[in-house]
Image (tube, rainbow, N blue to C red; front, side):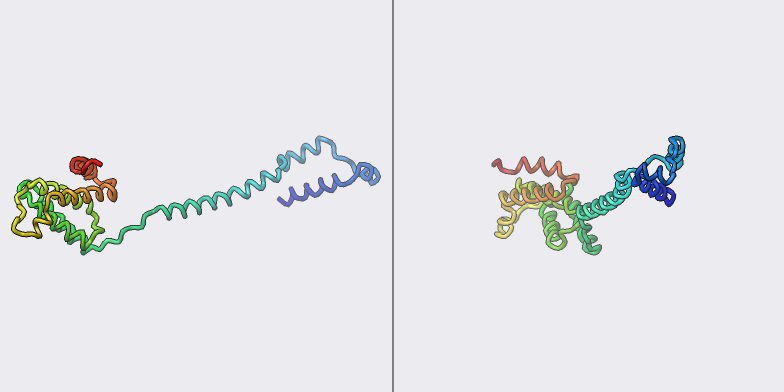
Length: 202
């Protein structure tokens, strides 16, 4: 690099002088073959814009990487902090609800009781989409007076809670929540199908 700089200085100094001065001082202009030899030695001329590009490109690359990293960090959803004890309790309730939901029992009131208990205490449950599906289907079946657990008509509380229209409204809420909050759930397709059947036409 020092040699190249020296050559450039000589050439600049040479260019700043007039031919007449050179002749007066007896300075000989190098023949073309000597100039070609020098150019061959130092390589092709390096233009300033090429040098600037080589210097600037790494800087732009670094800025791009930093910007991309920042954008990626903003787009990453924060991990949900789940309590292992509450997870275990919720999983137990889900298992019990599945047992109650099966054709052998068809205990849909028990399914809803387990769901309501879990959702009130721990809505962050990792399998809440599954629970929403069970709650929605149980509400639909109860609204049709299906299942082995019948509504106690002597209880005003039960008559109000398990009224067919209210059960359908609850099922719409459960399925809609599943579809909206858990779009990747394996229960989404079935929820959408049942929702179309029970949701009143607008």
